[in-house]
Amino acid sequence: MGLMVKSFEEAEIMAAKVGPKRISVLRAENREFLLALKESYRRGYVEPILIGDASKIREIADDIDFDIGTFLLIDEKSQQKIADKGVRLVSEGKSDLILRGHIDGHYVYRALIRHSAQTGARRQICVVALMQMPVLPKFIGLVDPGITVAPDFHAKMAIIQNAVDLFSHLGYENPRVGILTAHRRLNAELDSVLDAMKIRDAQSRGELTGCIIEEGLSLSDFFLGKSGFLENHGDIDFSFIPDILLAHNIEFANIFSKLDSMSTIDYFPRWERHGIVTGADAPAIIPSRADKHDAIVTIIALGVLIS
Amino acid sequence: MMRNFNDILNEAGKLTEQVMVVPDPRSDRVLSAVHEAQRVGLVVPILIGDQLSINKNLSSLNIDTDGYRIIDEPEPTRALTRSIELIHQKEADILFQGDTDMKDFLQAVTNDTNGIATAQSLSYVSLFELPSQNRLILLTDTYIQEFPNVQQKMTILNNAISLANSLGIETPKVAVLSLVELVNPNFISTLDAAILSKMSERKQINAIVDGPLDIDCASSLERATRKGLKSLVSGEVDIYLFHDIESGYSVTELTVFLGKAQVAGALMGCEIPIILNISFETVHSLLVDIALARLRKR
Image (cartoon, rainbow over all chains, first blue to last red; front, side, top):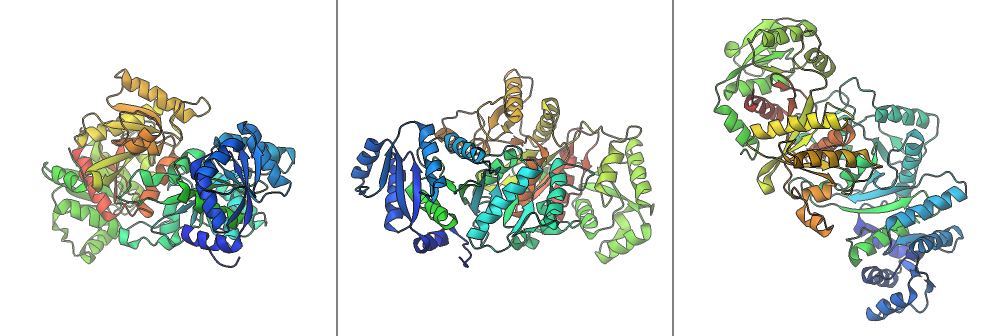
């Protein structure tokens, strides 16, 4: 693609040029989703494939004046079957990406993991949270706030590669990967630190490609160096923040992705974030429950760029 | 109730000063913090280290060495041992890590024969100001205990409650953080949280504890309500209790480096107040740490 996508606004501009992509919408019978698809279709991002309760989908589409007559519409009511069908469409090359519609996330994860196991691909499926923080002029990718509870070394390697691949789709050449650990100036042999050492060794053997693994083991290391101290806050230079951050476990990744809620206004203006499931045949984009149609349009644009 | 770092400095300033011993003070950072604490009347410092270089460093910072008691002990390990002796001899009330190595310092403090704490009892609390709500929040454990079980979480929590009490928060509201708000036997963090909540309900803990809570439900009443969750602490949490060090330490770092937030901290669970020299704390943080040490109940 060449150009580096630094914000969700830019993603929307780029998606119109890259699209349309074929998008399978899992359980499409929801007003916000159909509004989002109507707009995404109008902008040339996507060609929707609608899976779900056909009569309900038609009813809502009518109501919002969205002509779905030319789209593939698959009538199915069981949530698991909907998810399985969507995943199959992608693996058969009939669809480029998956959009989680009005369906519980675990049906989608289950379908993806099951399919990946059947194909024997031994791939690690994970969520990359793409975050746009007001203070940073680029995206930060956080892994894995959604699927892998306590990734071991091998899982972490695969998770990093997933995130790196996603970032390269967004035009980030050799993204910097920071492995976040609780390494303090103590004699701690934390699993997170041992994994970080192994990941670095593996990269020096050529196992992780297209990225730079940061030397440090924590934000203090990234910002202050191994033995530095923070003298005052004016010294903080945001350019030290890596592009991709790997969390040791889901407990921490989950808090990190939502940290703006702990101190809204005071320290973190609300940051926009969207989750993408990577590591499967095609990316699955997963708007959060509370997302309105304009937020869903944004995440669709993102999906178009990385599929 | 103290609502920001200035309140802490003001309240501590009203107390009669105490003696603070500082082993191996070499850096401008440590000397500046000590000097400021002395200047505002929080402490009378005793510096133990290489007398010549201490004098030189103090004068290069334009600090008058008159008000200082300096004990010449150029060897850092011995300076540390000597500092702890002064605590035992009741010649000093407060211990500041100074520029001693973190590992050596904590080992000396928790040493079986002449230490002043046990490794199990210690925990760290990090404080942030929330100006928009005009109050302080306490995060724990952000430095010491790594993967505490429910028993150790009780110790960590009681330590934080004790600090909250010192700040004038009588019955603090506590959120035991997890990634979900439903108890799920597959996630230990949710089980521990449920146990601690129940213990609080039975008055076994002197605080209003709720959990498991995710960070959204803990910090925002609006978002908890949207999720259909009723919690006594949503949006009013004084103490956030983390499941493990990976969360506690890194969340504190994130808030400091990405949020550019001033932080302060307190090492809890020891016989006397101890101040650590943590890399992400600024000179001003250290000053607030010293004030906090003064406010701690003995």
